[in-house]
Image (cartoon, rainbow, N blue to C red; front, top):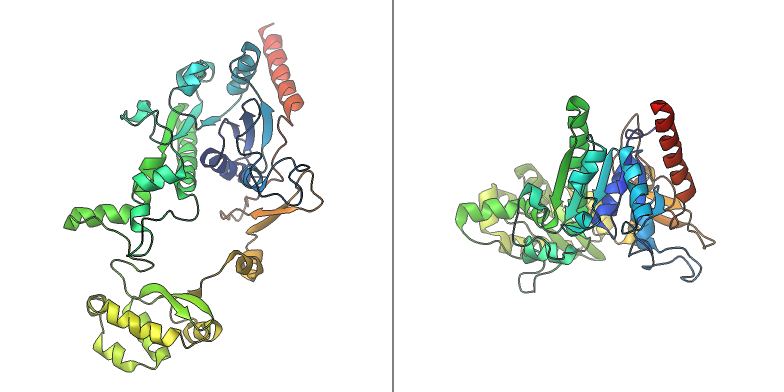
Length: 395
């Protein structure tokens, strides 16, 4: 039993932001029906593959964010497929799409039309610049991807080394953070419907989400009128809070409280630094000199030895690569790696597990991603059964 196992979601999204949002819902038990355009989601064919691109049904990109869903291929430009979709809408709780504003209206399947078929429907969209229903802007209708959102929203300007160019964050946060916020909005709207019987429109824009993600830059600019920019791995208002080179790799140290600072100085055998810089203000004013002192120590100590010295007293960690993550027993104990069937391959594929943990209704990846149109027969049968039941009720 999943926390959302009574929720039916029609997922018209593709690529990353929308599929990640509905994946979160599917992991928590929702019945997510992936309604795919003719030919399927654009990223079905994206690499990597386990062994053989020609034999495998889809790549890792699609597998990772579409696990546990059912697939139905529909062409909403045709009357028959549009009618099938509207029949599904009548039985659905949520519809999610991530087209440009106005696309669903071209199919006569916009929010207002769907609401006529299901007044309690929660309709959710993820767009680069939002939907006119919740706030019209000149940017709506422009195409957007993660890179665009990171650039506009300020993420790139504050990411990278001080003497380097603006840099994209590695994970697609423009997609993923927006998707997570959209899932929160959907669940809030479902809760509201349970209390009032009212459906509503949920709208999350990638640009807006990146401004929210960069919340620190907003209040910094408000206070001093200066636009924050890149400063590597350090923090504008905390020190030490940075990465350092060890004798055999890199570590991060977050010792900005007075207690953590004293413990770090003790591990370094530098009680003089603790005495000379006893408070946060003095450390921030002298951060460059103090960073050099810390770096001179860390580069002589192996990572494991350093972490042993700091363990339990100073927040510190090694900078891990993905191979390290696969070997970390914490990750296995927390079930953050999930093995799923990869159609066409002899071996399974490993994907990221669910970070949401619950004691009674534990979320989990619900098996592999679907083949294109894999669930057509069962979904159309459900439509026929519903239609037949409605006719019998009328009699």
